[in-house]
Amino acid sequence: MLLNGVRGGSFARSPRSSEREGKRTMPMSLRESVQTVSDPRSLDASVEEVFQLMLGVGCARENAHPATGQSESVTAVVGFGGLLSGACVFRSQSDVAMKIAARMTGMEFDLVDDTVKDAIGEICNMLAGAWKGKVPELAAHCGLSVPAVITGCNYSLRVQAPEFQLSHAYSFEGAHFSVTIVCDGLQ
Image 1: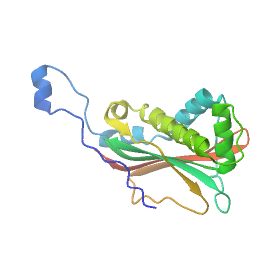
Image 2: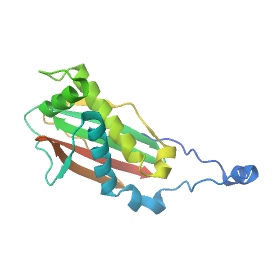
Image 3: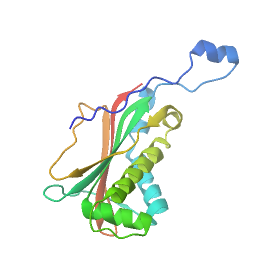
Image 4: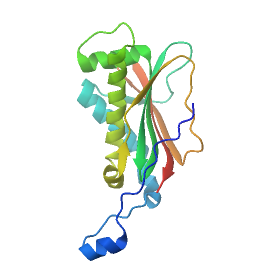
């Protein structure tokens, strides 16, 4: 599957209109601050914040990504559009997705149903929002798409030549998952 991200126009006013109104605007380029945008500590902090808030658990970063393969996995994708185009991707095995949904809803799950998919989509949406909120330019000038959730076995997501990619594995209470931020374009 090819993931191209969400592209959007710039939200910046022209310098002349800002000068006429006597207002100062923030520089509308992330190229100068790509090191800040791609800092892995922002992703780690976002995962910790979201899981603490929504599930009441702490997360630890792992050295290896969770195994994918024959068993069913659940992947949620939220696109970025504006100054940065790309996506936030959350991926876990189905049992981990059900555990997350159970903690969020107080219900038990035997299979990945629409409630589990909605919960994973919402977790991904919150992770994307928390991550972009760590960079002021992104917080103000980068929108999010509606989450898409994919389930199945033996599938992969492919991104063509990203400008940068952050991909980390995390765990809580023995449950493993991964979060990836992919940037396929910066303005």
